[in-house]
Length: 162
Image 1 (tube, rainbow, N blue to C red):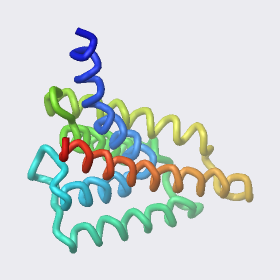
Image 2 (image 1 turned 180 degrees about the vertical axis):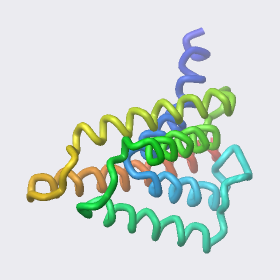
Image 3 (image 1 turned 90 degrees about the horizontal axis):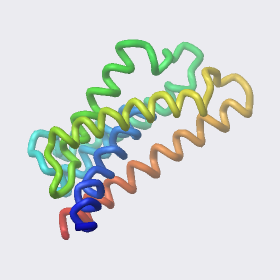
Image 4 (image 1 turned 120 degrees about the vertical axis):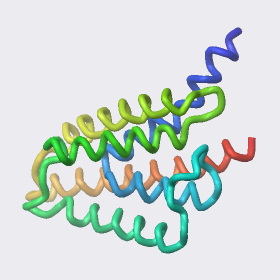
């Protein structure tokens, strides 16, 4: 009985993780999904996975990390930005939903992860990148996003082999 309760919850970690990643750094979530798709590790076939797509998504992730530190970078909580983060979190959540979990459950979990990543990331980071302390927090968020992206790709690889 305990295994059944743990099984579906375990199948939602990837969904929640891609949502958090999309909330922290939107394009890092896109890049992680593209890489996982290229390795055949997603439940869906609708995530582009060609070498060109992976390269473009990865370059966009690095560009977002750089652009995020510019003084003109918009707040991640404004409606268009927040909506994109939620949408990508939901799509990624459906794609990374594990065994015993519906894609709908994965999408909802990814959306909730995106809310958490957006709001917690903004609160931890603050709204400025003017001082050395602000830059340190911004770079820490970048490192966290990159590490989470790698962990999600590796986790998806393990899930596909199991």
